[in-house]
Length: 222
Image (cartoon, rainbow, N blue to C red; front, side, top):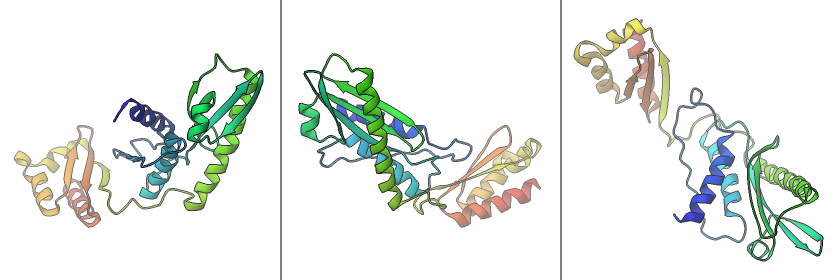
């Protein structure tokens, strides 16, 4: 990826990071790939909208949907017009590219490029208000496709089950030379990580195997 792609990715990441669940609620690594095949508008803001919808569709419990919009400006002789959702020509010929992303409750990321010396507070206020109206409209359209994250994870996603056992039982779970934990892994095919504080994480793409591993562990540490 070039400098432009990296910058757009960083902006989109900032926009959606604010609504991600905490590790204790969703202990997964999230990777989002946005392939832009053609563009006559803001590909980074399209990425924000697509990222939010894709995570909701995959079952990631984000706090709220996020949308983004690129605002433009035509300024000449102290007169101006603020544009919403600018096209490529409007970006190229205009005086501002102002990207605003956020939820229905507030802004999560901003980025501005301008070709003039600066903006008045009046222009900035109007651009922000116009961006809000555009963002709310886009969120409304997204809401027609998916209103909340799906209750279940995607069937293609690996599963993680978190358990907590008494620290005194860690030795029993591991067994002499790791015999007990290896036996559970061999029986179920589940990867098991045991932390010093008694936290046990089970990893598998098969729900039945996870349930079996959990039952076996509970039987050992009961």
